[in-house]
Length: 411
Image (cartoon, rainbow, N blue to C red; front, side):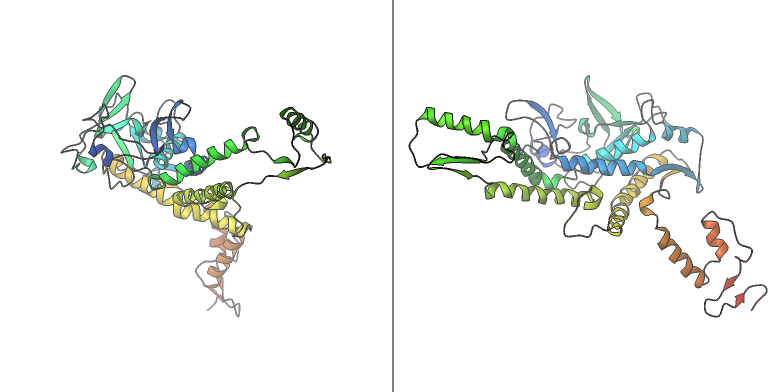
């Protein structure tokens, strides 16, 4: 049984969760209610059981929350008003940093996230934004279970709380979702295709734990060609442990009786394969989430560890992983929030203060010199961009080769 696979997902028409072909088709892997082999019940997901999934999601969410989210109108940021206050403090206990960290966390764990406008919402700009657990949300479809229609045709959503199913209208939600070919109204877990790798990693971890726990495999055996009685064997074992045990054996010399030898044991090839399997699964998880090894503080022996290589991987992480995700968040908000409410404002992530996206001083200087030599900028324009005072002669452009001034006073 794949412990990472959810057997079925309840629907609004089937809140009890009775198993059906439609539910099997729309099943979401990697989260399930199951019992551990020792009988302990637990709700399991990859974020709980797999260390590298947990680490990867943590890296992604922390960095996304670093990007400043601003409300703009006519290209200018606003610093006051209802919208500004809503996103500055989405509700009494959530900050803007928390809002995007938790939203992105659900996105990378479940492939979707939900903002709810609250129980008192009656229209217009909401007073609060609450993040809901996607695993507790089920939708009511139009049409048949076998042929669900597009997500926008969902009439209502239901939140499974302690008091039962709570109906929520579609206009009371902002639904961030990744494309799901098997269940269009819902997002899809990004680790769906990695369920076997995660299961293998779980059992590899368990096998390693059993190997290391309580010295599960002896470091060696005492071998003799003589016949010894059980009490003699026990006495020999106690004597060996008292003199050469793991704690007391540092730099001691073993003296063995006639005909007795110590034969060390090593890991079997099967055990070694477990470590190789875990390494493969590690890189598979990082690749799926678009995280370069150096961003996860992994030293890959096959790649350079220079500062330039590290900077390039951090910059690539933002350019090819985080920025596309942020652009998708902006687009969803534009459609489901600002445009739906008829607002002239829009939301955007401001990345100008992200160090990983800034050029080094040397690279910037070379670029400035090249643009000055080409006549694209003057020296004073460069100084103003750097926040420095202009030079009296800085508005004059000089040709690089013969240094002939070309301006009002020269030709």
